[in-house]
Image (tube, rainbow, N blue to C red; front, side, top):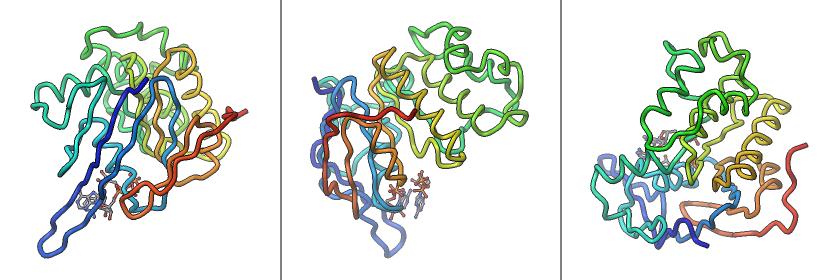
Length: 229
Ligand code: ADP
Ligand code: ADP
């Protein structure tokens, strides 16, 4: 089943005399329950596409449907509700609130949504039960990324959007973080979209999309996605 349909999306930025076509007529279906990895060099439009999927940004032209609803025509109020209740975001640099502990960062997210999961359970699930009273500055990068995954997962989002989730981590820590995303996908059924320029991450996906110069150049299906061991 299709969770999200992107239909001929374009995104154009104007900076004085310069026009940047960040996306050019890009179409893509995202299927419910899949792990989709979007690969491509820096500047190919991956983050722009992810931001549009997450309702953080609107396309210049083209349409986006979420479970059949045309969100490219939705108002601010609907988009805020969509971002809060349906989408979890995981960023390269975690974006945690520094004055709040790990637990408080996750609680804050839970408080905003209609049907959150139990904070305590989600923190245990990401392996942070012992560190949750610490502040982000007292945690390693991998631990901070666990908090940020817990913050996204506690919303029980239909769609988990990850922008270079391992980009600031060493190889081993990155593998643990990817394994956690696979676990959430399997156990909670969340659809997971990961943007990266790290090609091997494609091995864990059900499908791999390649982007170049603002368009999708290839979509590959993985017969046997490999979970990071
Ligand atoms: P990627 O995530 O693949 O590195 P981006 O989606 O960040 O690519 O960027 C695609 C293109 O759009 C790049 O040329 C980038 O400089 C440009 N771009 C992205 N965001 C903006 C913005 N807010 N204003 C102007 N140009 C932007
Ligand atoms: P990443 O690939 O790690 O997401 P980027 O450099 O592509 O990092 O983008 C980081 C942020 O900066 C994004 O939100 C993007 O929209 C914005 N951005 C990228 N390029 C530009 C640009 N030329 N002008 C303004 N904002 C940009």
